[in-house]
Length: 468
Ligand code: URP
Ligand code: ZN
Ligand code: ZN
Ligand code: ZN
Image (tube, protein in one colour):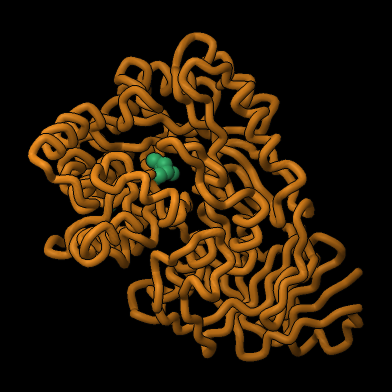
């Protein structure tokens, strides 16, 4: 079956050009000069006149069904990947979890049991290591060799849950240096944060805003710097800082990169648009909707401005969502009277392509950089390139027709995520996801959904293209 996406402007990291995209089956077979494609007889035609044609989005940081704080993230692989598709994301990389004390491979099997047969789009896994010991280090080698899992997340936060100490981190980094994996780091000093949390609660400071106040930017900066130092000691093993939110942490990443180090980082839309005061500090318990870690930062400091700059300079390489939704009712409200019991996470997998495009509208990013940060670089960073992340012959036909003249109003009434509120309620986007194509199949068109659960495939990933 052939499909021609006709009349659009194809955007890639290196430029924009008028071109028609010819798809055969699941693959892109040619980019055609529009003057010459009139003679092509395709079974189906998608009209992209006046629109952008971009590679399907790759969200490299999601947590479908993640158990957290006595509950679990409210999107299943079914609901969460359908919502992603609606928003122009055609691949997710979710985090399988090894709980402390659990065999790594058992944690991975549990994640496959949740995801397999349920995803609407293609999916891959990183592995969270909740307990670095000799067995876990051996398991890292096996996952890289056999399971297509080439990145491992460690936590400097959450003592007693996912936390690794510096010795464990160093050993995991040394193992990654040998097997070629990427270490992903949740960089916050969890030991110091726990002290601040206990002190705040003892003073009766229980509202959601204290979640942010007890996780100061300085403790993200410190942990980021420490992670970079440990990676340098581990013979410059590649390091990827997740959900970076603080200016100081970004400075540490930029300085390491300027020294020629293999250090990369992502940020998330919530840190570009939402703040400690306006959202986390909302009256009463409302702020619980925006409890996530790292936390939203103060609008009176330069964090958001610096993050946009970091995206331009490539000190921030990727925008992921850290999609980890919890409903307000019966989930976030577990923390009424004690902010430390509010499950951590914000849902946004449906809105990343739109929210980052807003940076193009606002003059913060070029069109090319938009595509690079939401699709091409995540593919290269995590071993999916050139199968994903690029519009080129031989690549999977994951395509989004994006209408720069359309508009999108974000809100709970219209979103498809399994959440009873929207973190971005009322936000107006200048731009709109039109047709979404996943491996040659039109799954969203004209506001109608044609996808189905189970059509998404598990992707075994290779090593990062950024390895040296
Ligand atoms: O608040 C967050 N980010 N929840 C998900 C878990 C994590 O640390 O990424
Ligand atoms: Zn994290
Ligand atoms: Zn630099
Ligand atoms: Zn996360």
